[in-house]
Amino acid sequence: MDTTAPAYGLRRDEGTPIWFLGLPTRVLATAAQTGGGFGLVEHVMPPGAASPWHVHHMEDEAFYVVEGALTFRCGDQELRAGPGTFVYGPREIPHGFRVEGSQAARLLLLCTPGGFEQFIIDLSEPTPPTGPPDLEQMLTLARHYHCDILGPWPG
Image 1 (spheres, rainbow, N blue to C red):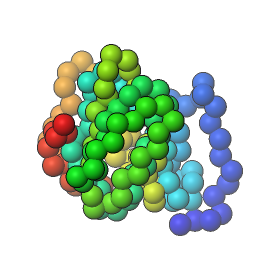
Image 2: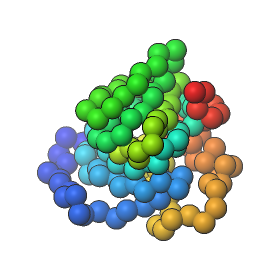
Image 3: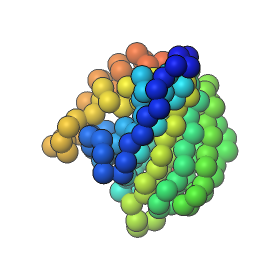
Image 4: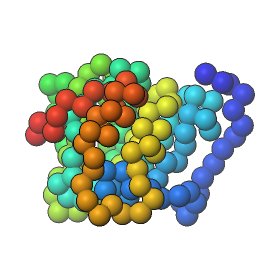
């Protein structure tokens, strides 16, 4: 980790929005901007949206619910989460989440060390997609970033 990274900030109206798996997403900080320390991403997800069931081999993942309601599953543990909830998903433990209720959710995703945010960037599009994600591309990129997609969210 590079401890000489310069100070960095991003205001709410700054940054380039992208579409990750069809979801409006903002990459707030990358490993390059944090000296390798972490990557920080904001997702806005509609009701019913769910991550795939997956496991990271290189980084821990932490989540902070800003708006909405989600259910997280990490290994055998399940947690219902509303605004202000923090959830930690350690590497090597399968995990995922789903948006509950009738309102959209806004979620901050922190990966440590940084680097996995590049997977999100690489799989994203600059405008809303017109079709479903390319599953083969997602699986190939996930392997490249030391992450296994195990299937759909098991909830």
